[in-house]
Image (cartoon, rainbow over all chains, first blue to last red; front, top):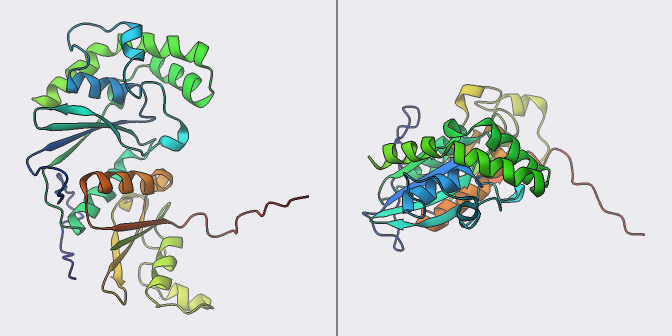
Length: 174
Length: 109
């Protein structure tokens, strides 16, 4: 067993390439990440796979009916949540706390070391689109466990941030 | 199998763990042995996320150490999930932070 180690770690690997029997080589993987992986990244991923319309603001019921919306616990951080496929895109959401940058860098290096060979993985941070309402509501609902206070705040905040999230997804899809 | 030893900065704990893995240290190392390790106390916060190759173990598997900052807590779960989803080479990611002090024992009455 031999491993190549001359991958360009310091220059930053833009795309990790992975080998797999399970996943077709031409599939593109999109991973939306935010702090907790329960609100903004889930909403963005849902827009990406077409569960939400990018132009129309969703109702509270529609947001709450999304898979994984407002369900993550602290122990779930780092777990991939599969949101669906659209065309050749596989879309996931994940909560990476404040450690998105080093964790993603280390992961891309890992895939380069393992010489994996499937399509590019795109990591998209959704934190720039998050507003104060979502932060306060997310902390109340997920960290403190106060769903009665946190959920209305985070739902209101998600509606306010919806156009930003939709624009982010539109830029990602190109 | 790729071995990743990670801690907060990748400067102390994980490099000693990697050296133990590679049998570069005996079980009772002196201070000079630890200070003599290459890269001991060298990695800086801006190096977070960059794995450093410590060497190859007896099975020929590469052993890396790295700092992950606050990501040390979630990285193992994240990497295992993603690599099992998209099937990369087998990976063992070891968080070295819990090891300086033994876990508190639970006493039953």
